[in-house]
Length: 438
Picture (cartoon, rainbow, N blue to C red):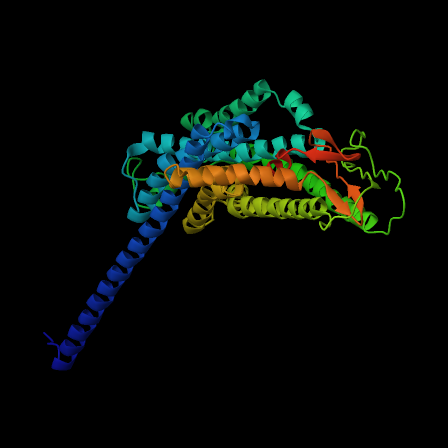
C-alpha cells in the first residue's frame, strides 16, 4: 500500500486551507450583498409608503385639493401605489433576499394576483390622469366646459374601471391557472431546477396568449393613450409659446396715437389651439414689460418639459418588464431570473416616483405637504394665500410701450374690469394650477 509523501500531505493541507478560506470569503461576500440588498429594498419600500401616504393625507386635510377632480385620480393612484408598497414589495423583497418562498402555494397565487392587480391599476390611473388633462387642456380649454364634460359620474366610472379592469387579468385567470395552460411541464421543470416544491417555491410563468393579452391591457394600450394625450397637450403648449412670442413682438412695436385692436384669434374659435386675443388701447406708459406673456411662456415651456419627464420615467420603469414579458414565451422562457427580478423592481420603483411626478410638482400639493410636515405652521398657509393674490395681480394686465395689453387664455374664465377707460382681462389662478397638474 503506497503512502503519501510529506510533500503531498503538505499540498493537501494547503489546498484544503485555501478552499476553506475561499468558501469563507464567498459566504462573507454573500452576507454583505444580502445586507446591502436588504437596505436598498427597504429604502425603496419606505420612500414609496411615505410619499403616497403623504399625498392621501394632504387630500384628506386640505379642502381646496378636494375641489379639483384631477386630484381624485391622484389620490386613487397614491392608494394603489401604497398597496403595492405594503402588500407586494415586502414579500418580493423577502423572497429575493432569502432565496426561497415560505408562505405556501395558495398564497403564492394570491401574492402574484395582487402584484398584477395593483401594478396594472397604478398604470391605468396614470392613463386616466393623462386623459383628464387632455380633456381639460387640449379640448375644453375652459373650466366651465370641463366641468360639464368631466362630471362626477364620469370620474367615478373612470376610477372604477382602473380597479375593475385589472381583476380580469389578475385574480380571475391566475387563480384558475389559465396562465399555465400548455406550459405545465415547463413550470415543473423550473421548480425542480431551483430545488423546491410547490410550497417552498413561487414560480410564475405565463403562456403566449396570457402574455400578449395581459401586456396589452396593462401597458401597451395605456401607453398608446398616454402618448396621444400628452402629444396633443405638448403641441398645444408649444402653440401657446409661439403665439405669446408673436404677441410680444407685436406689443414691442412702436405705437403712435390710438392703436387699433389686434386680434390673433378669438377664444371662442372652433380650433382649440387658437387661444389668444390682443387688445391695445391708448394708455400711459408702465415700467412693467409684458409680465403676463413672459410668465405664461415660462409656464408653458415648463409644462412641456414636465410631460417629457413623466413619459420618460414611465417608459423607463415599465417598458423593459413588459417587453421581456412578451418576448420570453417565444424564446422558450430563456430569460434569466436575475433579469426578470431587475425589471420587476424597476417597475416597482415607478410607484415610488409617482408621488413626486404627479403631486410634488403641483404647487397646491406642495403647500399642503409643508403644512402637514411642519405640524400646521400658519406661515405656509399665509404664504399660499399671498402667492394666490400675487399671481392674480400679476396676471391682470400688462403694458407695453404705453399700450395696455391683455392676454386672454381661452381655457380660463375671464373677468373684465374698467380702469380709467382701459379694459383689463383678469385670468383665474387655475391657469397656473392646471399646468402644474400635467
